[in-house]
Amino acid sequence: MGTDMNNLCTERPDVGKLLKTKLGKLEMNSPLAVASGTFDLESLEFFDPACLGAFVSKTITKEPKKGNPPPRLYETEAGLINSIGLQNPGLEVFINEKLPMYRDKLSMPLIVSFSGSSISEFCAMMEALENCAGIAGYEINVSCPNVENEGIAFGTDPLVLYNLVQNLAKISQKELCVKLSPNVSDIAEIARATEAAGATSLALINSLWGMAIDYRSGQSRIKKGIGGYTGIGIKPVALALTYKVAQAIDIPILAMGGIYDWQDALEFIWAGASAIALGTANFINPLAAPELIIGLGEYLLTEQKAIQDLVGRVRI
Ligand SMILES: Cc1cc2nc3c(=O)[nH]c(=O)nc-3n(C[C@H](O)[C@H](O)[C@H](O)COP(=O)(O)O)c2cc1C
Image (cartoon, rainbow, N blue to C red; front, top):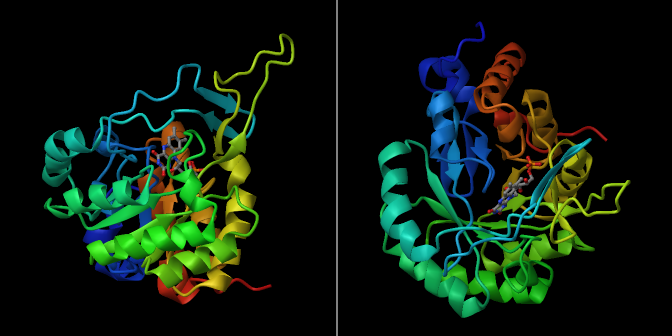
């Protein structure tokens, strides 16, 4: 098959059919998505975008956010700590300026990630987005560790989350994916509440809490002290939580957390993910996405298996 950048999903029907998957209501030509906040349109210039089965946009909030003060990124020996703080241009600019660009450039389904500070704000945002063309679904961010009183307050309490998701499910018939936090004591309970409220898929995991300190000076590497930890070091945690959630619910999982290559992706699929996303890996290797799909495609072709044959089939 070779490792050129030709797209397996569109140019090799024998591989393309093995790579197809479903995330709730979304038919995906590839099981690979990009994790919110780690990838934007300019990154698509490096490869054929058709290897992505879905595009998840950076989380937006109703009002613009400047984000947290720098330093807000630190590379540890095993992953990244970030404290971006949901920097974004706000809903109005997103709808008027970003969305038309996405409509123009993206051939795969667009999932819009958003967060709010009250149930009514979440609902108002979804209502505004429902009036826009070109959106295939939503990722509800209730799990950002880098902002206070936003999202995360909803993601840690099953009852509050149930109420939020139930209200959102009444507004839209599109894909309703809820992004869960790993920073909870019982993620299975949260996942069950989300499913019962009407979510059609779950995304996990968002960043863990993380901190780094210069041992010589005692200076925190991140201005706010604690940030969100992502990348290679969180993979075993993300894998365990994917497995735990997959055991607890029936709706599909979009899994992420330390996925760098096709072997990582396969591990998450065995654990119970119907689709996977690349996050921190996008900063390290701009070709991580096509390389992952080529490797996964070769594996599936050799084994004569489709993604759906492997989801959740881990041997314990
Ligand atoms: C710089 C950076 C910005 C991020 N911004 C967002 C965001 O806006 N919304 C969100 O839901 N997750 C955000 N995340 C979390 C990722 O989407 C993903 O859940 C997390 O990084 C775990 O995946 P990874 O280990 O592959 O990076 C961000 C992560 C990083 C590193």
